Image (tube, rainbow, N blue to C red; front, side):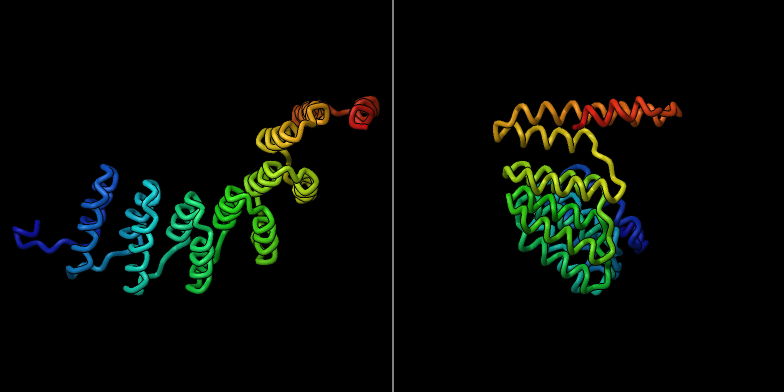
Length: 240
């Protein structure tokens, strides 16, 4: 195209960059990106998103950080995806200090963190066994008006279970249910694993039976079968 005197715009550059990244040729991808920056073509947000995403997937977070720095220097307006991608890469390597710096940069540049942003950070702190920080982040999330979902709660509940703090895990489950979010098999498995690790097998079995009873009860409701007084009494007796 260039040899024929046709000056390419950002679209063909981005398409080629996407193909190179898909082939895991990340050194070539960085060379192509630098070539784009040196040409008269102005890369857009998608041009940067592609190599950042691929570098993070390969665990090359430092290189991904450099690409984001290039984007910021150009004054390119970024979106939530690129910040979340970079935060996810940092969290996967337990680089929580830099992950929080990315969050602060995201806010400073007028991009609001969403439930994905906070869930990634909470997961990172839980992996690092820093569950107190993960709970503080959950509180900050709520203060900023971002509603946690089942995945967010499952992550933090499992984090507390892994460190043996089942009381905190139970409190979070109660909070989760008060917000209209229901336990799923991830929540149950996390609790059962936590109980097993602290040698509370009997309690784990009780929890399992109670949960299975609730699941069956909800299936009855979904099938438009109307529970009667006997149904409720059996369920309440079983949970006492």
